[in-house]
Length: 186
Image (cartoon, rainbow, N blue to C red):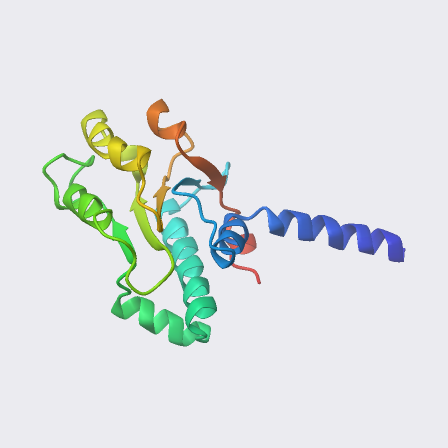
């Protein structure tokens, strides 16, 4: 019975090691984050998937702050709420069905990639609802994603399991978050 429990613990650890926040957290500590990731929801996700992605991202960013600045989670959460110069959260303009070329979100994306990180080893740029990028916006951002500046990692968070444009998918590492109850376990 001890062997079975050990195997069960090993299997649980293997599953935990494949969670995006663990993978990305390990890469962060080693300063080896890639330039571009697509973060997808669980396969059978239902309900408010955008909130699930926001919770996941907040948890991940809090972990980064805890590791890099030696803060406890509450202090890191407070700092995150105030704002961190190297974390950019990009969302569609309110009321828009898709990202538009002349929108503030598109300008913010370009600006965020214009200079290196200021206080952390890597700047994190998170684009929510990346499935709503139209072809024109995706093409505008493609050059930035093809020739990333060192020290910048872009996360496309998508509420859909439908593939993004093939030009984006081919340049990204795709990770899938675990269901909410598994995702936030320590």
